Image 1: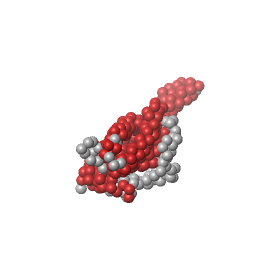
Image 2 (image 1 turned 180 degrees about the vertical axis):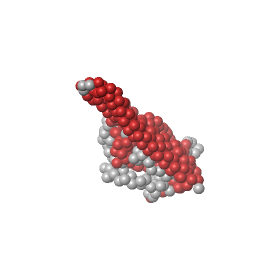
Image 3 (image 1 turned 90 degrees about the horizontal axis):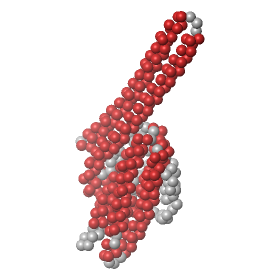
Image 4 (image 1 turned 90 degrees about the vertical axis):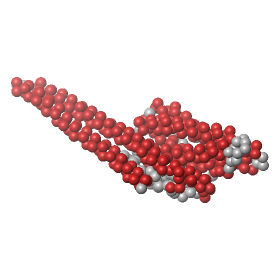
Length: 345
């Protein structure tokens, strides 16, 4: 996949970055397909709340895939030590995937999330700028490492191969720090700050593609790498699946559901308080302008009736919101336990 190093990308935190390879295709509302067991890819469950957590679960699943490749690259890097042996071709395949797929698909989707978060949360501008710079730096280091690997593959002496260890270790450390910052800071802030319509915009602007290594069909150039990862993926696949289904997505769905319900309840209470206050002022005005002792005596009763009417209506609306939130959470739990029975069955 030919690319030009240093291709211009905006350094501002708000605009989303375009892929250096090709423009994004029109978004398609296609649910992610379950991956083959031998690759240990997580089978994602669909969110019950406007697909809000869907993009978060997808990004975190891709982080797990990237982390597994960084672990594999670290094992090969250890093989570059004197007296050991490393598979340089495997190093090339790992770095090629980390250069191509994340930069083409994963990072643009993160940038879209960053763009919307920066509008909702101006305090996140600095960390978003740092992460966008990190995307460009990862791409630069990937290209640099691929060039070094190409030189090492054609070299006759082991010295050139051993020289790969330091840039490999720096690359691994930088990538891991970048992912930790995304998950530890920005993903958490997105969960807290973004609204229902924001999640809908992120999902609508994201395109679904089949992962060339971890997807349903492994591309020819990644078959050897897939086989290398296969044994380890089978061993940890169930553990990753359980962690994702019962960990991140559960936390995100619960948080989003609670935040949406709380916002709706606040809106209901505020609306009825304003309506009650307005009606009370109007009733008091009519009472003060009306002649006769009976009109004055009826004023408290009219005020109490207005308060009682809005209180009853407000309680009913709040009850509907709470019931819906409980239903969403109950459905989410039921889906997870059905998945667990299938996984362990």
